[in-house]
Image (cartoon, rainbow, N blue to C red):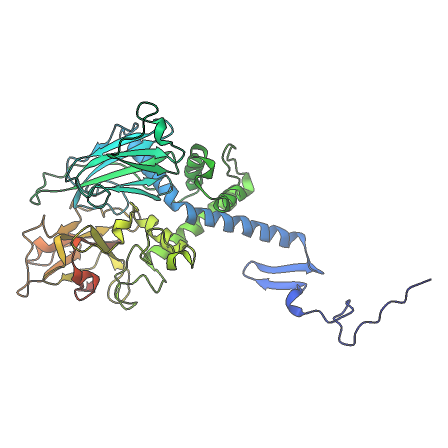
Length: 477
């Protein structure tokens, strides 16, 4: 017996028995930023399928760029110092003087003497680093630029020196230092989730003295073209698979990158990667030099001074993790800076250091190397030790290369700077020094931009409560 077909409701959607919410339907044509997407009864046509898959793979590759800037930066440091001979855990580059602008090194400073090494905990096993009493601050970061431990004054030795035993996370205390005996109590034992770890140590100059600049020419900057993906693949193949969470590894797999497999993008994927890295690089530069965050500004949006640690958390967690991770803040930091340590964000009056960056003048215009600017450091700068201003190149995010090997001024090293009658110090920036201001001048380059970092060593309370503040960068001519 035939079944009678139910009659549609009077207000039924065409080809349905009932009214279907429009919000769950897909029209035959949809206008988007990708162009017009076309469907037959919700089924995408061939051209739409191709468009959205190309877009999806591009988005994943852009996310890989933004997420893996920290890893790529550590790897660039690793390769750069390997080229200088740092190819074993007992080999360290000890700078005989301050770093100068010959080095391609993300926002390196001209204030401290660097000693830099790398540990490979798979090749060498658990490794001991002995820090002498009175050493400057040191840090260990893993291959993804995650914090492992501080050394020196901000570390557990509190400046008294000590022995640090660094080991891979699967290390068992009784399997080290000669067999079954436990690690002696005087060792600070720290475990890392990765094999390769970066070890930067710093020391302060005594009495502000320096010898003539020593040029150490090396590159520690990751690529911003399609070779970026090759750089990170080398790390993915080397490090343990669970060094990164599955979610983030999924984006790698989506573009053909997986531990134990050859990364060999076909012609289509190679074309998309070229596009994605260009978009990713432009995104990172926008985040770094035109931040949109409301919480990044030291003195509100009307000021140009901002912090490299947006949110004040070295893990970039929002509200102790309730808001997840601020990925833009992480990208900003690692695109322009190195060394990840909670000591940089903790309020430690008279200890450690604080940083403020500016990439625009008082009118929010980019800084032009052909023009003259000034910054006033008011009297009674809130430092127990000293302050410095260093000029950087926006292309390399390294020190600006000019005829001055040190593109900076330092209140301890540059004791001949002229002060105003009120005790303030005006620093001038431009291609030529204003008359009579040579001792307070930092050179810039016509045709190039620049940005600035203010460092306070041993910051005092008036920095933290903001009752003292530097002037904005003022255009003079």
